[in-house]
Length: 301
Image 1 (cartoon, one colour):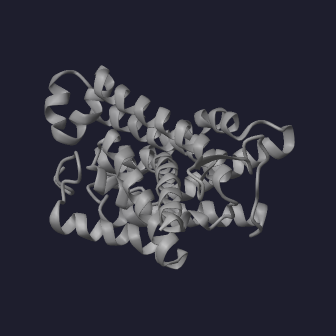
Image 2 (tube, rainbow, N blue to C red):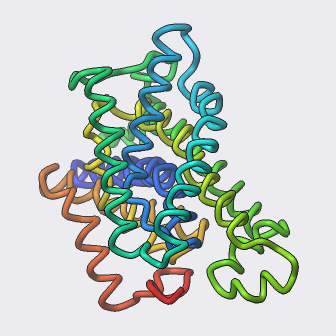
C-alpha cells in the first residue's frame, strides 16, 4: 500500500508541474486559435525554434535559458506580425483562410523544421543551468519519498506567471477587450473607431511571441531536436479546447488536468499510453462539453 501511495503522490506532483509546462506551450495557441480563430498548427514548431535560440544563447554566451527566452521574445513578436500580415493579405482578406490558410501554416511548419535540421542536424540538444538535474525530495512517513525536479518546478512557476499575466492583460486592458471583441463583433469594433485587423495583427504577434519563453522552458524540461514539436501538437490543441477557446485561466487548468492524467497513466500503465491521453480527453470534451471548462463553444466564432 505504501508503494502505491508513493507512486501516486509522485505521479500527482509530476503531473501538476508538467501541466504548468504544457500551459507555457499552449498560451500562444490559446490566443491565435482560441481568440482569433487562426489555426496556427505551426505553433509547436515555433516553440522548437525558440528552444534552439535559447540553446544558442546558452551554449555560446552562457545565458540562462529563461533569460534567453525573454531576450528572444521581441524577435518572435516581429515574426508573428509578419506572418499574420502575409496570412491576412493572401488568405483572410480574400476569404480563403479555411483550407488554404491551414495549408499555409502546414508549409510554415515544414519550412521551420527543415531549416532547423539543415542548421543543427537531428541530434538532441541540451542547455546548462544550476536548476537542471537537481531535485527536492520531501519525505512523507517512513516509506514515501516525493521528488520535485527543479527543472519542472521552474517551468511551472514561469508558465503560471506568464499565463496569469496574459490573462489579466486580456481582461483588464482596453486592448485585451478589443481582442475579445474581434472574435465576437468586428463591426461594433469598427464603429468604436478601432481597426480590427490591426488588433488581430498585434494579438497574433503576441501569441507567437510566447514561443520565446515557451521554447526556453521546453529545452529546460527535455532534450530537443527539430521534429519534437510534432509530439506536442495534440497536447496543445487538446488543452486549448478543454480550457475553453480563448480562456487563459482555463488553459492553465486544462494543462494541469492533462499533465496529471498523462503522469498517472505513464506511472501505472506505461509511458507508451501517455500520448493517447490528450487525444482521448479532446474527443471526450468535443463530444460532451464542446465549450470547454470556461470558454465559448468550439467553432462558434
